[in-house]
Image 1 (cartoon, one colour):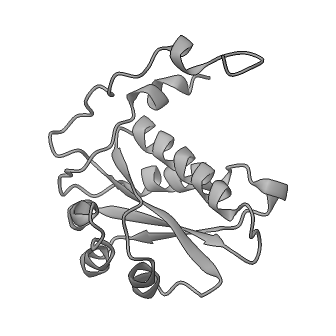
Image 2 (image 1 turned 180 degrees about the horizontal axis):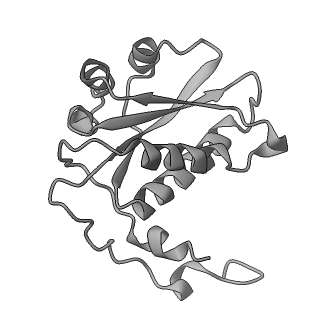
Image 3 (image 1 turned 90 degrees about the horizontal axis):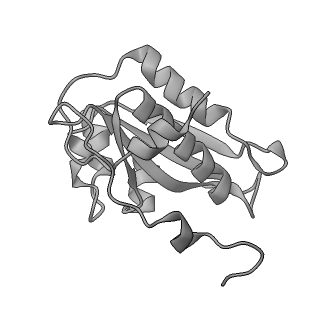
Length: 166
């Protein structure tokens, strides 16, 4: 079992072609989120899958979210503020990261969306008041037909130290 391959290949894709995502691939992506760990196993999440073009347009009003009108699927990650007031943001983020990794393993592109009007997104997906919008994921096939090589990363020694910060 090796998860480093899709993790190392994952990049932010902001241009998508019009191909639909196969239902089985989408289910595996969502399953990757469902089985994520969470604080006290509260699983304070709800994932809303948005295919409809008019709803995706309603989600695209953030400064860096215009391309949501192009991708075939947007997954809105919602966190239950009552169920886990301290940890819902972390828990939903972990689940979404699992989804991004699985999407890459499926040969799909993805992009985190943190630029959104929460009230507009909540209205578009009819989210209840006790849920917050944590982030959205654009998912689809990259417009150029292939995933590019991920950006250069800092070296291991630049970001890791043992026992203290030095």
